[in-house]
Image 1 (cartoon, helix red, strand yellow):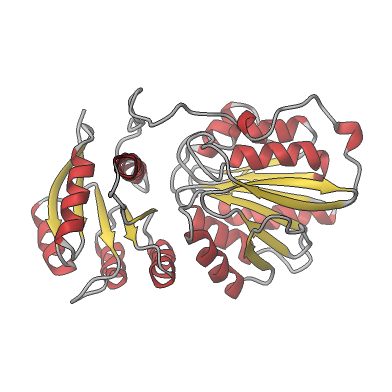
Image 2 (image 1 turned 30 degrees about the vertical axis):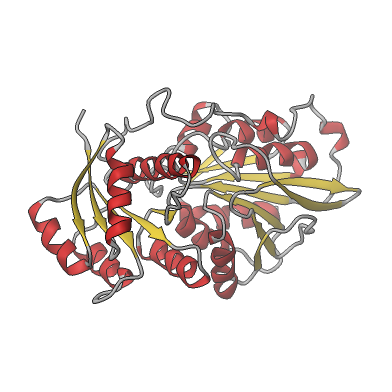
Length: 360
């Protein structure tokens, strides 16, 4: 199988070497070049065109964002941003996603064997996912059995599936539940900017590392008509507000009387993700039932597909983003294959469709 060619761009020699060792440990990946700044990177790209670039966005001579703008306008290549876990670093990384980067990875901390293995797994997976984005060069880049640190768990580990409770779910409040992964930051931006101030409460899982979700929510809140915040345990689900699950925490919908609220809690990875869309969707199926609308957007893998089916079985209306408008048509495709989807729409159609449906 043809290996995924990767170019590493980082001003730190230590980080470059660490990334080289982590990526080279995967037999499906080949590091074809390393560069300490974007000017050297441009010369490397002329020599060997990589399938994926890992990019530090805080660099001398030319910052990563300027390089990314030039790259996306002249020679689009899937980019994985390697970012520091600081307020400035996370905010810059979110801006990089807006400019066309497809994934974020926190700069590896490799002072223990466990952290080293976790960093290796996450980085290699992100690079493989990125290699399928946009041009989708290779669709068969799923990890080999035995590569994963732990087995793939289902939503059962966070919330047990129960028999249908349709007769118990009676309320006038609608909840919109959304799940997304690769490409989801821009998809959610498009969707949320189109939602009016009187929209139902929205709960969202976007696969994103810890700390990045807070900056992501802040940026969306500054440009959208509705209020958007990173969810905190016990937050009420209110009309005109969207709650985004924090990175490295699961988020579940709960209900007390007619009031919906969220529970944010730790737990194992579900579908190798935390937060997981399946966990959110299962809780929505249980506590909102037919009073919910489920939306599954762009992303690699199958997280959310089973949960969306459970929502549909409880009477919720379910929507999938179509292939043409997805960065990666993995999650919607799997949901469609399970017959969990009632409507397939382009990204720009989703919000108007929901608004029109709510009016009826």
